[in-house]
Length: 327
Image (cartoon, rainbow, N blue to C red):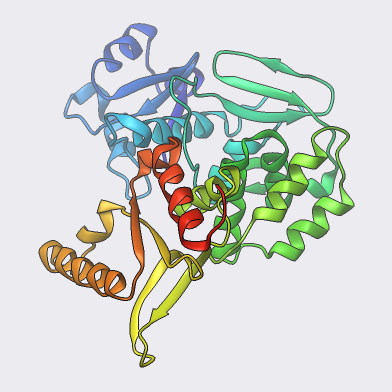
Protein backbone atom coordinates (compact mmCIF):
# COMPACT_ATOMS: atom_id res chain seq x y z
CA UNK A 1 0.00 0.00 0.00
CA UNK A 2 1.02 3.62 -0.37
CA UNK A 3 2.63 4.98 2.80
CA UNK A 4 1.79 8.50 3.94
CA UNK A 5 3.63 9.86 6.97
CA UNK A 6 2.50 12.74 9.14
CA UNK A 7 4.59 15.64 10.33
CA UNK A 8 4.21 14.24 13.86
CA UNK A 9 5.56 10.83 12.80
CA UNK A 10 8.57 12.39 11.10
CA UNK A 11 9.24 14.65 14.08
CA UNK A 12 9.06 11.65 16.40
CA UNK A 13 11.70 9.98 14.21
CA UNK A 14 14.00 12.93 14.85
CA UNK A 15 13.35 14.96 11.71
CA UNK A 16 13.35 18.74 11.77
CA UNK A 17 11.18 20.89 9.50
CA UNK A 18 14.35 21.69 7.53
CA UNK A 19 15.04 17.98 6.96
CA UNK A 20 11.45 17.44 5.83
CA UNK A 21 11.80 20.26 3.32
CA UNK A 22 15.02 18.73 2.00
CA UNK A 23 13.41 15.31 1.67
CA UNK A 24 10.63 16.82 -0.48
CA UNK A 25 13.24 17.23 -3.19
CA UNK A 26 14.29 13.62 -2.80
CA UNK A 27 12.17 10.82 -1.36
CA UNK A 28 9.00 12.47 -0.03
CA UNK A 29 6.06 14.19 -1.72
CA UNK A 30 3.59 16.48 0.02
CA UNK A 31 0.09 15.05 -0.42
CA UNK A 32 -1.70 17.66 1.69
CA UNK A 33 -0.94 19.76 4.70
CA UNK A 34 0.95 17.66 7.25
CA UNK A 35 0.95 14.45 5.17
CA UNK A 36 3.82 13.16 3.03
CA UNK A 37 4.01 10.26 0.59
CA UNK A 38 7.03 7.98 0.53
CA UNK A 39 7.76 8.23 -3.21
CA UNK A 40 11.14 6.54 -3.73
CA UNK A 41 14.03 4.72 -2.06
CA UNK A 42 17.01 7.05 -1.94
CA UNK A 43 20.61 6.54 -0.82
CA UNK A 44 20.94 9.67 1.30
CA UNK A 45 22.21 8.48 4.73
CA UNK A 46 19.99 10.83 6.75
CA UNK A 47 16.94 9.45 4.90
CA UNK A 48 17.58 5.87 5.96
CA UNK A 49 14.27 5.78 7.84
CA UNK A 50 12.38 6.57 4.63
CA UNK A 51 14.54 4.21 2.57
CA UNK A 52 13.61 1.29 4.82
CA UNK A 53 9.91 2.02 4.35
CA UNK A 54 10.31 2.47 0.58
CA UNK A 55 12.17 -0.83 0.32
CA UNK A 56 9.48 -2.87 2.08
CA UNK A 57 7.62 -5.45 0.01
CA UNK A 58 4.36 -4.01 1.34
CA UNK A 59 5.04 -0.46 0.20
CA UNK A 60 3.69 0.77 -3.13
CA UNK A 61 5.66 3.57 -4.74
CA UNK A 62 4.04 5.93 -7.26
CA UNK A 63 4.78 5.10 -10.88
CA UNK A 64 2.32 7.03 -13.06
CA UNK A 65 3.41 10.26 -14.73
CA UNK A 66 0.45 11.52 -16.77
CA UNK A 67 -3.15 11.01 -17.85
CA UNK A 68 -6.06 9.26 -16.22
CA UNK A 69 -3.85 6.61 -14.63
CA UNK A 70 -1.94 9.28 -12.74
CA UNK A 71 -5.17 10.89 -11.56
CA UNK A 72 -6.35 7.50 -10.37
CA UNK A 73 -3.05 6.92 -8.56
CA UNK A 74 -3.14 10.41 -7.03
CA UNK A 75 -6.64 9.79 -5.67
CA UNK A 76 -5.56 6.48 -4.16
CA UNK A 77 -2.64 8.21 -2.48
CA UNK A 78 -4.85 11.00 -1.16
CA UNK A 79 -7.39 8.54 0.23
CA UNK A 80 -4.60 6.61 1.93
CA UNK A 81 -3.41 9.84 3.55
CA UNK A 82 -6.77 10.17 5.31
CA UNK A 83 -6.77 6.67 6.82
CA UNK A 84 -6.56 7.27 10.54
CA UNK A 85 -6.84 11.02 10.03
CA UNK A 86 -10.51 11.58 9.22
CA UNK A 87 -12.48 14.38 10.87
CA UNK A 88 -14.38 13.04 13.92
CA UNK A 89 -17.58 11.31 12.86
CA UNK A 90 -16.61 11.15 9.16
CA UNK A 91 -16.51 7.96 7.08
CA UNK A 92 -14.84 7.41 3.71
CA UNK A 93 -17.49 7.13 0.99
CA UNK A 94 -18.21 7.30 -2.74
CA UNK A 95 -15.06 7.07 -4.91
CA UNK A 96 -12.86 6.87 -1.82
CA UNK A 97 -14.85 3.90 -0.58
CA UNK A 98 -14.65 2.24 -4.01
CA UNK A 99 -10.87 2.30 -3.71
CA UNK A 100 -10.94 0.70 -0.27
CA UNK A 101 -13.36 -1.98 -1.48
CA UNK A 102 -11.11 -2.77 -4.44
CA UNK A 103 -13.42 -1.52 -7.19
CA UNK A 104 -12.27 0.57 -10.17
CA UNK A 105 -12.81 4.28 -10.73
CA UNK A 106 -14.37 4.27 -14.22
CA UNK A 107 -13.08 7.67 -15.34
CA UNK A 108 -12.25 11.22 -14.32
CA UNK A 109 -13.79 14.31 -15.85
CA UNK A 110 -11.37 16.64 -17.51
CA UNK A 111 -9.85 19.21 -15.14
CA UNK A 112 -11.80 17.99 -12.11
CA UNK A 113 -10.01 18.36 -8.80
CA UNK A 114 -8.93 15.26 -6.90
CA UNK A 115 -10.60 15.07 -3.50
CA UNK A 116 -11.21 12.41 -0.89
CA UNK A 117 -14.91 11.90 -0.17
CA UNK A 118 -16.57 11.29 3.17
CA UNK A 119 -20.04 11.35 4.68
CA UNK A 120 -20.86 12.95 8.01
CA UNK A 121 -24.20 12.87 9.88
CA UNK A 122 -24.22 16.58 10.79
CA UNK A 123 -21.69 18.47 8.65
CA UNK A 124 -21.11 19.17 4.98
CA UNK A 125 -18.11 21.09 3.66
CA UNK A 126 -15.75 21.21 0.69
CA UNK A 127 -12.04 21.78 1.13
CA UNK A 128 -9.13 21.61 -1.28
CA UNK A 129 -8.59 17.89 -0.74
CA UNK A 130 -11.80 16.79 1.01
CA UNK A 131 -15.50 16.71 0.08
CA UNK A 132 -17.70 16.04 3.10
CA UNK A 133 -21.36 15.31 2.35
CA UNK A 134 -23.95 15.63 5.08
CA UNK A 135 -25.64 12.23 5.10
CA UNK A 136 -27.24 10.08 7.78
CA UNK A 137 -25.95 6.56 8.20
CA UNK A 138 -26.30 3.83 10.77
CA UNK A 139 -23.69 1.59 12.42
CA UNK A 140 -24.59 -1.24 10.05
CA UNK A 141 -23.60 0.89 7.06
CA UNK A 142 -19.99 1.36 8.20
CA UNK A 143 -17.11 -1.12 8.31
CA UNK A 144 -13.34 -1.09 8.70
CA UNK A 145 -10.97 -2.41 6.03
CA UNK A 146 -7.18 -2.27 6.44
CA UNK A 147 -7.57 0.38 9.13
CA UNK A 148 -9.89 2.55 7.01
CA UNK A 149 -13.33 3.52 8.29
CA UNK A 150 -15.53 3.21 5.22
CA UNK A 151 -19.15 2.84 4.13
CA UNK A 152 -20.15 -0.76 3.44
CA UNK A 153 -20.08 -1.95 -0.15
CA UNK A 154 -23.86 -1.82 -0.54
CA UNK A 155 -24.06 1.68 0.95
CA UNK A 156 -21.18 2.77 -1.30
CA UNK A 157 -22.92 1.48 -4.44
CA UNK A 158 -26.15 3.21 -3.43
CA UNK A 159 -24.28 6.50 -2.87
CA UNK A 160 -22.58 6.22 -6.27
CA UNK A 161 -25.93 5.55 -7.95
CA UNK A 162 -27.40 8.62 -6.27
CA UNK A 163 -24.59 11.11 -6.77
CA UNK A 164 -22.60 10.16 -9.88
CA UNK A 165 -23.43 10.28 -13.61
CA UNK A 166 -25.37 7.40 -15.10
CA UNK A 167 -22.50 5.80 -17.04
CA UNK A 168 -20.12 6.05 -14.08
CA UNK A 169 -22.61 4.50 -11.66
CA UNK A 170 -23.66 1.66 -13.97
CA UNK A 171 -20.01 0.80 -14.67
CA UNK A 172 -19.25 0.58 -10.94
CA UNK A 173 -22.23 -1.64 -10.15
CA UNK A 174 -21.54 -3.83 -13.19
CA UNK A 175 -17.96 -4.32 -11.97
CA UNK A 176 -19.13 -5.25 -8.47
CA UNK A 177 -21.56 -7.81 -9.89
CA UNK A 178 -19.16 -9.20 -12.48
CA UNK A 179 -16.47 -9.79 -9.84
CA UNK A 180 -19.02 -11.50 -7.57
CA UNK A 181 -18.70 -8.97 -4.76
CA UNK A 182 -22.49 -8.54 -4.80
CA UNK A 183 -25.52 -9.63 -6.78
CA UNK A 184 -27.93 -7.27 -8.50
CA UNK A 185 -30.92 -8.52 -6.43
CA UNK A 186 -28.94 -7.76 -3.28
CA UNK A 187 -28.17 -4.22 -4.43
CA UNK A 188 -31.83 -3.69 -5.37
CA UNK A 189 -32.98 -5.07 -2.03
CA UNK A 190 -30.67 -2.69 -0.18
CA UNK A 191 -31.80 0.36 -2.18
CA UNK A 192 -35.48 -0.53 -1.69
CA UNK A 193 -34.87 -0.80 2.07
CA UNK A 194 -33.00 2.54 2.11
CA UNK A 195 -34.94 4.94 -0.16
CA UNK A 196 -33.52 8.44 -0.52
CA UNK A 197 -35.40 11.72 -0.35
CA UNK A 198 -33.76 13.12 -3.47
CA UNK A 199 -32.61 11.49 -6.74
CA UNK A 200 -34.48 8.24 -6.17
CA UNK A 201 -35.37 8.13 -9.86
CA UNK A 202 -31.66 8.31 -10.69
CA UNK A 203 -30.95 5.36 -8.39
CA UNK A 204 -33.79 3.37 -9.97
CA UNK A 205 -32.50 4.10 -13.48
CA UNK A 206 -28.98 2.98 -12.60
CA UNK A 207 -30.29 -0.30 -11.18
CA UNK A 208 -32.48 -0.78 -14.25
CA UNK A 209 -29.44 -0.59 -16.54
CA UNK A 210 -26.96 -2.62 -14.46
CA UNK A 211 -25.87 -5.94 -15.99
CA UNK A 212 -23.05 -8.10 -14.66
CA UNK A 213 -22.49 -9.78 -18.04
CA UNK A 214 -20.43 -6.80 -19.18
CA UNK A 215 -16.77 -7.57 -18.72
CA UNK A 216 -15.16 -4.13 -18.57
CA UNK A 217 -15.74 -0.52 -17.64
CA UNK A 218 -15.72 0.38 -21.34
CA UNK A 219 -18.47 -2.13 -22.12
CA UNK A 220 -20.65 -0.76 -19.33
CA UNK A 221 -20.24 2.82 -20.52
CA UNK A 222 -20.94 1.71 -24.09
CA UNK A 223 -24.18 0.03 -22.99
CA UNK A 224 -25.33 3.23 -21.31
CA UNK A 225 -24.52 5.22 -24.45
CA UNK A 226 -26.78 2.88 -26.44
CA UNK A 227 -29.61 3.85 -24.11
CA UNK A 228 -28.78 7.56 -24.15
CA UNK A 229 -28.68 7.60 -27.96
CA UNK A 230 -31.85 5.46 -28.19
CA UNK A 231 -30.12 2.60 -30.00
CA UNK A 232 -32.11 -0.59 -29.36
CA UNK A 233 -31.39 -4.27 -29.60
CA UNK A 234 -27.79 -4.65 -28.44
CA UNK A 235 -26.98 -7.51 -26.07
CA UNK A 236 -23.62 -8.07 -24.34
CA UNK A 237 -21.36 -11.08 -24.89
CA UNK A 238 -23.21 -12.55 -27.88
CA UNK A 239 -21.88 -15.70 -29.54
CA UNK A 240 -22.11 -15.62 -33.34
CA UNK A 241 -22.21 -18.90 -35.31
CA UNK A 242 -22.28 -19.57 -39.03
CA UNK A 243 -25.06 -21.30 -40.96
CA UNK A 244 -23.64 -24.69 -39.96
CA UNK A 245 -23.56 -23.83 -36.27
CA UNK A 246 -19.81 -23.39 -36.15
CA UNK A 247 -18.42 -20.85 -33.71
CA UNK A 248 -17.32 -17.60 -35.33
CA UNK A 249 -16.95 -15.03 -32.57
CA UNK A 250 -17.99 -13.92 -29.12
CA UNK A 251 -18.73 -10.23 -29.42
CA UNK A 252 -18.83 -7.42 -26.86
CA UNK A 253 -22.23 -6.35 -28.23
CA UNK A 254 -24.43 -7.56 -31.06
CA UNK A 255 -27.82 -6.67 -32.49
CA UNK A 256 -28.82 -9.86 -34.29
CA UNK A 257 -31.82 -8.36 -36.04
CA UNK A 258 -29.76 -5.48 -37.47
CA UNK A 259 -26.74 -7.77 -37.99
CA UNK A 260 -24.54 -5.20 -36.29
CA UNK A 261 -21.64 -5.79 -33.92
CA UNK A 262 -19.96 -3.26 -31.62
CA UNK A 263 -16.54 -4.07 -30.21
CA UNK A 264 -14.43 -2.09 -27.77
CA UNK A 265 -10.95 -1.91 -29.26
CA UNK A 266 -8.73 -1.83 -26.17
CA UNK A 267 -5.15 -2.00 -27.42
CA UNK A 268 -4.02 -3.61 -24.17
CA UNK A 269 -5.68 -6.91 -25.05
CA UNK A 270 -3.13 -7.40 -27.83
CA UNK A 271 -0.24 -7.14 -25.38
CA UNK A 272 -1.26 -9.57 -22.64
CA UNK A 273 1.53 -11.73 -21.17
CA UNK A 274 2.28 -14.77 -23.29
CA UNK A 275 0.59 -13.41 -26.41
CA UNK A 276 2.17 -12.29 -29.67
CA UNK A 277 0.65 -8.89 -30.59
CA UNK A 278 1.06 -9.51 -34.33
CA UNK A 279 -0.67 -12.87 -34.13
CA UNK A 280 -3.45 -11.41 -31.98
CA UNK A 281 -4.03 -8.64 -34.52
CA UNK A 282 -4.15 -11.17 -37.37
CA UNK A 283 -6.63 -13.37 -35.50
CA UNK A 284 -8.76 -10.29 -34.84
CA UNK A 285 -8.64 -9.39 -38.56
CA UNK A 286 -9.72 -12.91 -39.54
CA UNK A 287 -12.50 -12.86 -36.96
CA UNK A 288 -13.86 -9.58 -38.29
CA UNK A 289 -13.63 -10.88 -41.87
CA UNK A 290 -15.78 -13.89 -40.95
CA UNK A 291 -18.36 -11.65 -39.29
CA UNK A 292 -18.58 -9.44 -42.36
CA UNK A 293 -18.97 -12.53 -44.57
CA UNK A 294 -22.02 -13.41 -42.50
CA UNK A 295 -23.46 -9.98 -43.28
CA UNK A 296 -22.57 -8.25 -40.03
CA UNK A 297 -21.41 -4.66 -39.85
CA UNK A 298 -18.63 -4.28 -37.29
CA UNK A 299 -18.05 -1.04 -35.40
CA UNK A 300 -14.86 -0.72 -33.39
CA UNK A 301 -14.87 1.77 -30.53
CA UNK A 302 -11.91 3.31 -28.78
CA UNK A 303 -12.00 4.78 -25.29
CA UNK A 304 -12.39 8.35 -26.57
CA UNK A 305 -15.35 7.28 -28.74
CA UNK A 306 -17.33 6.56 -25.57
CA UNK A 307 -17.44 10.28 -24.83
CA UNK A 308 -18.40 11.60 -28.28
CA UNK A 309 -21.48 11.15 -30.47
CA UNK A 310 -19.98 10.24 -33.85
CA UNK A 311 -19.69 6.45 -33.67
CA UNK A 312 -22.99 6.04 -31.84
CA UNK A 313 -24.84 8.11 -34.44
CA UNK A 314 -23.35 5.93 -37.16
CA UNK A 315 -24.39 2.77 -35.29
CA UNK A 316 -27.87 4.21 -34.84
CA UNK A 317 -28.15 4.94 -38.57
CA UNK A 318 -26.97 1.42 -39.42
CA UNK A 319 -29.54 -0.18 -37.08
CA UNK A 320 -32.32 2.02 -38.46
CA UNK A 321 -31.51 1.20 -42.08
CA UNK A 322 -31.15 -2.53 -41.37
CA UNK A 323 -34.42 -2.87 -39.46
CA UNK A 324 -36.50 -0.38 -41.42
CA UNK A 325 -36.98 1.90 -38.43
CA UNK A 326 -36.52 5.65 -38.29
CA UNK A 327 -33.63 6.82 -36.08
